[in-house]
Length: 227
Ligand code: Z5A
Image 1 (tube, rainbow, N blue to C red):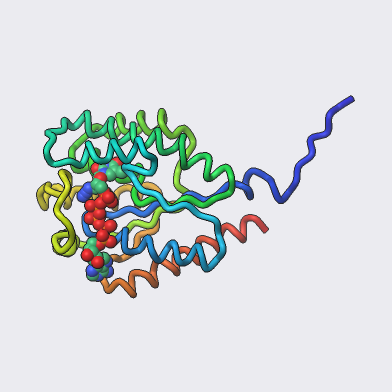
Image 2: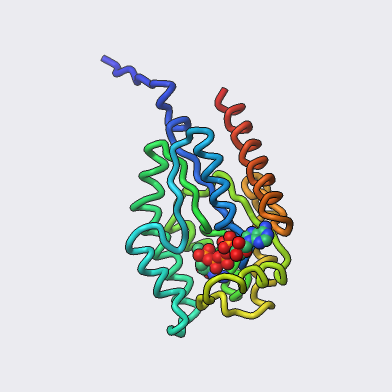
């Protein structure tokens, strides 16, 4: 007898899987501030969600974060790149994938676009090596939507200077952060369907309006596809 495959449309893998949203931007762009707006939007839409960050998001990945950002260490470029992906591998397996598979939306403050911008464009790492590690660690996992907060470097650095003490990477030069910004803009050009650029220079309220508008548009687009 041929076994008939029974599919429950409300549990089809496409509908059941949560969405993966990442927030990106260079120093002082305001990602962490806008994360609150994203959280409020998800709550208003009663979407189950998990907020996380990179490097970090699991106990082991948070421990790696402490090490890699600690100004007391001289970290080789290779080591920095590998630690970012080591933290990411743990984050994906222990937290991101299980959450997405159970229908929870995952919002991460930074993900692999940061690696392309910081280790790739700013440190000058061979992008093919990053692609190789990305493929190894992530396989098919990519964000569904990336909000890229773009701000002129001078404004970002000024905002960041009004915050807590700088970590190791935050102590880099303005030229470094210029390359980070260009790296992000290059990623947006390469992935126009996924990456939405948000002008992060105006007031928090105006940036929040753009954030909410982008999320509304995204929700509209996936509801249209699922209908
Ligand atoms: N990193 C990496 O190199 N490779 C990787 O693969 C990954 C990460 C994943 C940790 O990042 C570091 O890891 C980061 C990149 C590296 N190093 N650097 N630089 P993090 O995200 O944990 O920390 P951060 O990047 O240093 O945060 P940030 O970017 O500097 O801050 P932000 O989250 O974008 O901004 P904020 O904290 O929301 O705002 C900064 C200040 O500006 C604060 O006082 C706000 O009140 C104010 N603010 C925010 N928005 C506005 C507006 N619109 N107007 C005026 N003032 C504002």
